[in-house]
Image (cartoon, rainbow over all chains, first blue to last red; front, side):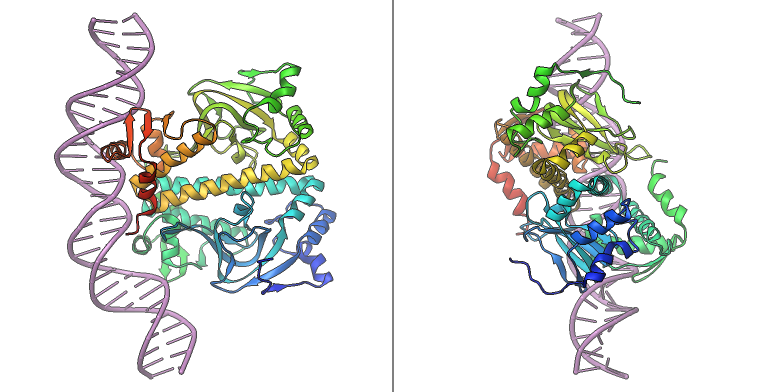
Length: 248
Length: 248
DNA sequence: ACCGCTGTTTGATCTGTGTCAATGCGTCAG
DNA sequence: CTGACGCATTGACACAGATCAAACAGCGGT
């Protein structure tokens, strides 16, 4: 066992059984579509929860893969590192989203997952998830959908990196965040960025200065209001226009 | 049923039962790691094969998702289209690789798959694959690995698009092709590109002129020899240096 | 309240890649 | 054999975004 056991909070039997059933992320997370009985079975498979403090790693590239993680609360980034030191943020994840699926293919994680604010995750031992998937058709199918969604998301990012210009990328990024916050019951127009300009830039394939300038430009045009990490989207449609209206 | 039935070749019982068991791609494709008996079960699930002529679509974005496809022979590209007409190649696939997993998440395909040369695929109805996965643990796990590998591959492309310069991207591209041809028993150093400069450029987030110039430059430096689509890698290590030695 | 650190903004300049344009090569049809 | 078409190469120039640099804001610690 190389896994450090610190930060793992074993649950009492009661809270364990209640984990998924009582979670308000049911509709976003793995239990989606399961019957009450099936959620109970999943509850038993979910071993424990773990708290990750801001700037701490949930896992690192190269570490042994054993579990995937469902984010219960908080905010993460994942990044990959090249031998020469260059690294790139591959995604930002929020409550209800699943982390760690990159590790399935090679029995080791291929990227780092870092908490951008104090967070909590549910640990889902992967072998148990597979066992349960063989018994619960709905869970099996839903898990496949989750993995597939990750592939589709990645294609979107590839599109963004491959064909879009700096301000289009940032507009796409803001709209995507807005949409995901909305799905979680937060304001679609006003939110707090958990990541730095540098991390946004890394994700979007831009330098931090370019990100900063694009923010300022959006603000001048009345599309958004920025104050450091506090964002208000003033003109949702205007941002969308920036994306598609590129042709004429 | 919206699926056009043309181009589907129903197999005789004998060839059907023999499909995976006799296929020389077993070790690269879905049957990897299965026992003889399990491969027989998979054979029964694989419904039919289909021939796709050069430039024809295997599926299109928006089409109903029913099956994934294992490439038996040939070469494909997948691409996504934005509303404004911009499109991007998201990958090139060769024998033994699986196509169509993007469709699982939303019950419809999210990209186009086009044959770049006359090709043959095995049609794997997805619901049957899920049924079989519930019975064969090895198959289930291997399928999860295949999906995960796709996610990891996508991260690699994101890295490439986000942090690498034109010539690094092309070097990475050539080395990746070389490695995949090698795994299939072809020459690691000499191969025929199935795609145009424009398609390479689209995949790498570059314009075709930039791709062409990078090829010429590699040739001047004695790293490769190019004649249209015929490539010979003369200095494998030199190409690798281009990738990592970026730092100093 | 002040210091020091980290992250952000803004400006000036540089450069890699895109854009536009012309030419060249190969293949297929007639 | 010849013309036409698709694809590739090469050159000249433009520009988006990178790089370098300086100043500034916010925040935690003492």
